[in-house]
Amino acid sequence: MNTSLYSALIASSLLLGLAGCADQLTDSRGARIEGTRLLADKDYSHAVGAFRNAVKQEPRDYRSHYYLGVCYEELGQYQQAMQSYRTALTVPQGPDEDGTPADFRPQMLDAYAKAIAAHDSRDAELNLLEARAKTEGKTENYMVIARIYRYRHDPDSAIHAYKQALVYGPHDFSVYKEYGIYLLDNLQQEKDAEVPLRRAYTLNANDEQVNAALRRIGIVPGPGLKDQNQLATPLIPRGPIPEVDLKKLFNGNSSTPTNTNTNVVTPPANPTPAPRD
Image (tube, rainbow, N blue to C red; front, side, top):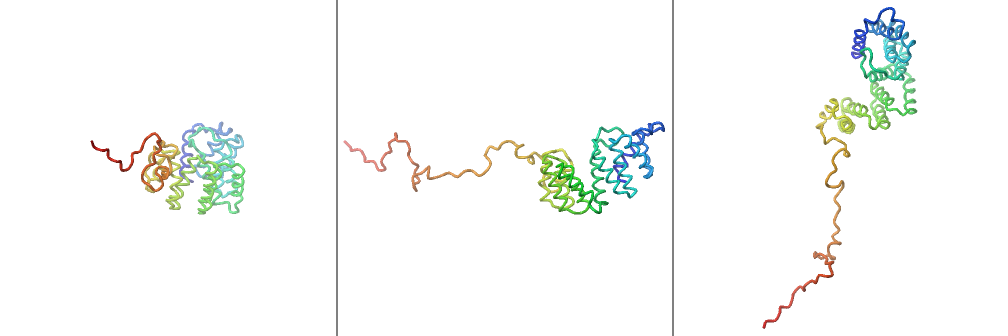
C-alpha cells in the first residue's frame, strides 16, 4: 500500500473513528469508515464488503469506489479493480469531509494508470480508454494513457500521448510540468525538456518542482522566461532592420546626394573670379 493512501486512511480513522458506532454502519458514510479501518488493517476481504455496502447506498461516493479498487487489486481481482477505479473517476469529486486529501483525483488517476500498466495484459482497458480519449477529447484521458506507457517503459508512446494531451489542453500547467519533468528526469533529454518546462513556468512561476527542473538544465527562473506577449514591447521592432536603398538617395554611382529642391541654385564647380577695378 502506498504511503499517501495509508496516510489518508489513518486520517480518516482518526477524524471519524468516534462516529463509527454500530447504528451508523447502515449508511454510506459509516460503511466507508468501517471499510477504511479494515483496509488499514489489511483485511481486504472484509473491507470489500464494507465498501460495496457504501457504494450501494451512495453511488456517488467516489472515495469508496476508489478504496474498493484498492482492495480488489490487493486480492488479485484486477478486472474488478480497474472497473472500480474507472467508476471512481466518473463521479464528480466533492469537498473534503473526512481527512482525505482535498485534491484526491490525481491519486485516483495514478492508481488507475498503474493498474492498467501492470494487469491489463490484453489491453482491453487500455483500448477502451484510448477510444474514449478520441471520442471525448479530454486532456485527462491522454494524461492517464501517457502514464500507462511510462509505467510500461514505452517512452515513444508516452511522449505521443503527452503531445495529444497538449493538443486538447494547450494551457494546462499540469501537462507541461509532468511532460517536461519526465523528459528531464526519466529520459535525460534536457534539450527537449526545456520547451515544456519554460511553458510550465509561464503558467505558474511559483511551482518549486518546475523551478528546480529549470535550474538543472542551466536556466535561471525569472521574468525573462515569460512568454513574448507577456513582456514589454521592444523599442526596436522584431525582425531584421530594413536595408537602405542607396539608389534613392544618390544619383547613379555618384556619392553626391541628389538635389531635389528646384528653388535652390547650385553654384558652379569653378566660379569665375570677379574682375578687379
